[in-house]
Image 1 (cartoon, rainbow, N blue to C red):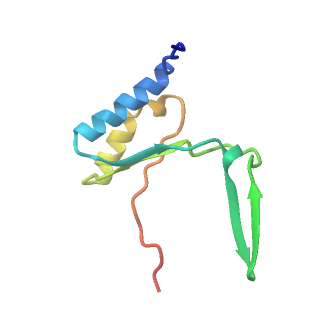
Image 2: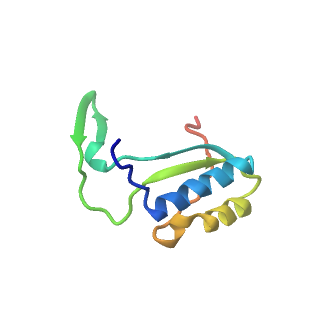
Length: 103
C-alpha cells in the first residue's frame, strides 16, 4: 500500500474550522478553488464570445475558496472571519448576499 501523506498543518486547521462551523449550524457550503491555471475568463461583447485561459496576470489578491454561512448579523460574520485560520496569512473578505439585478 502506498504511503499516504498527511495534509499540511494549515490545511488541517482549515478543515477543523469548517467542521466547527458545521457543528455550530452556521455552514451552508464551503469549497476550495483550483489554481487559476485551470480557470477560464469569459466575456461576451456585442455578441462575440472571448475566452481567456489561465493563468491570469499577476494580481495582489486571489480567491482561494469560500465559506457560505448563515449568520444573524454583520458583527457575527466578522467575528467568525476573525476565527478563520486563513486570516493569519491571507485576507478574509466578508460579504453579504445582494440582489443580482434591480430593474
